[in-house]
Length: 173
Image 1 (cartoon, rainbow, N blue to C red):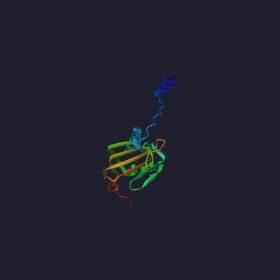
Image 2: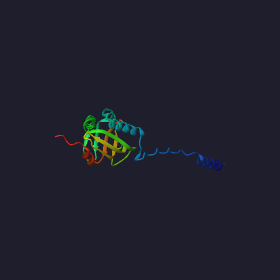
Image 3: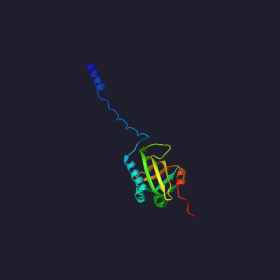
Image 4: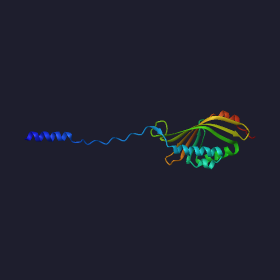
């Protein structure tokens, strides 16, 4: 009689549900599509810059923002960036038109090349008419990086300076 009781106990133990470990949450991808609201912030700022509303352009900038060009020159600090663009739009550029724009928002979670953050990439055709009467058109690429407070802390712009310099009014003597 003992043998059937032990056999039933063993079978019952084998058929009891096993406690399973909960599955590990999926690890975030190193890079994934970002938040479209970041793109909207960048578009609004660029359209404000295009229209000459530099104060509106500056609202999305962090106080320690840096505006850098591919040639290596840059302007550091929100106030300095706003001053630069007020001078540029008020005294150098008569009209600034952005067309054929393509936007891409990415979230970098892990990288050895760049700081993990939200980024927005822009490719656009830019036509600038200068105070001296000349104009230039070229494709320009911007990369916007957001800090952890949701402000833009870096804008890197890739452009060709040659057509800009050719269209600039002559320097005053």
